[in-house]
Length: 248
Image (cartoon, rainbow, N blue to C red; front, side, top):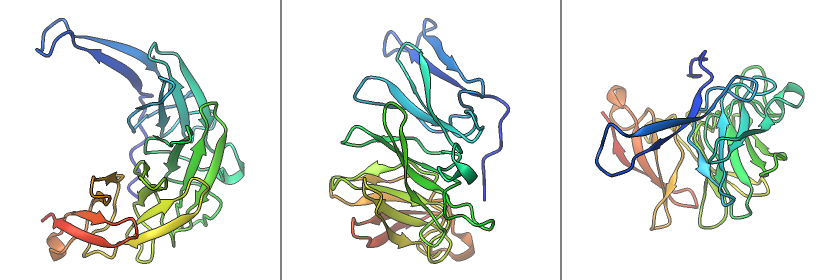
């Protein structure tokens, strides 16, 4: 699996203020919050600022069950843990959110967990896609079962068509990762299953370009045989994938 090492440091949130564009000794850092584990730990993903002005994010560990959390924090540093994962039996609601959140046009937040869900067997890691309100009400939209993907590390992106798009690190038809889309109500479609020569193991999310297509990367695979070291790809909203470049 490639799970990040479990760090002892809980993590911090900070703001860096520069008075001018020119670097100067007067630059000052303010620590807004230091996690203590009970309210989250190891926030790997970046923050997003929501339409209410607050910042929202995830922690990979910590929370009430030490399986990760979703939080919001004000610009002044007041943090609220909105949800602690693995609050349901057998972590049916997911565990270990590695990617950040995306705020949908409906005002809710959408994200993924690397593990957990209702479709896991002891052999598979699986993971989930979830929706959460600004007050902390969480809905599991989809539980991966490995055949449609597994371990979604990257953040979701809401496309211009209103659907959310993302990647899974492994799983799919060939077990090498997928690109998927999911509606706000939870209907998931696997757009592409990587097969090696076109890449494998996408860990990051996608971006949508002005041409309407989505662009992303894979951590491994490509068309250089044993020297392949990942790819850059383009994929249409309907799932036609083109490998743009293979690293060697």
